[in-house]
Length: 407
Image (cartoon, helix red, strand yellow):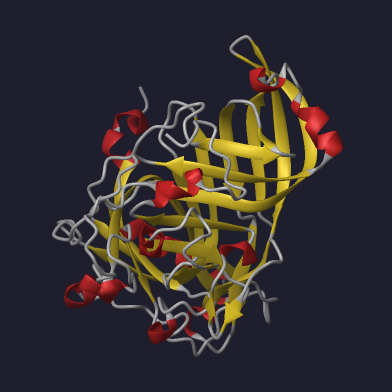
């Protein structure tokens, strides 16, 4: 048996993330400053340093190779999985803060969502568009949402701009403790993929690129004293609160889905900067949705999904993750406002015929902009909402189509 087979504890790791006051500037490495970091457990963490060497031609054959090469950009990639779950925090009568020191403004914001900021999302926490968009009622104002940003981060962006609804990206400082060592990466940005399979817990897979700042030895986990969100994530059902709509009706039962932001990103390099890299920046995003559905829909007399894509190639996607409660932030609503089908093929799963669909996510055009606060999620390709009474979206008469009848 290989020695790697015995390292079972390595699957679960501890990670902290914080917004940077200046892009590429470490958010704080001292233990006293650690309170500004959001902490969360993660799984299957992979850390890969990527340190470039600059090769030069020899001036003379007597020079040894170590006197020739110079160290270039010093950065690293880190990937991990995080359960998609709410915070489990009770909701009060007002939008009081819980983790305001971490840039998370609305009460009950799950700490793992800090990572979304480094994936090109911004935090929208003002009142919802209006009281009638999702069935009305004051409960909808308790929602919070993360939406993709169109404004790249700048070297002068500061922490004060994060969390106030301004449409801008931000870099992160990420640190994690593993095998007695504390790793710190600065100026991190990257990509996120949301995935869900029937009978399993939905999760987000993150990949970040950042400047390798420090690797420190430590006898104990310095993050162990900080609080985590304790909500238990809920597995998905094949039919429960998941719908991908093409044409006018929900598609057949869904076995799995994946929403990939497909961010393109790279390190902003500067040879006059320490480690020859300043910070990572997202240069492009092309979100796509892939899903696997049963090929026959009993509700429509055995209609094939491909028949609907012939009639119209656009639709929308909604999934409610987590338990539904009007008193705690335990559920998340992930939605793609508009999808454009690009390919469809037939497969097989446990004896059933399936159809595998790939669709491009695009934004709607009916949005209202008042000042610096975007008032409509439709202005973005997709969004992740959370908060109390988030399940009200399924009882609306809008594009959200509840395959369970709103129960």
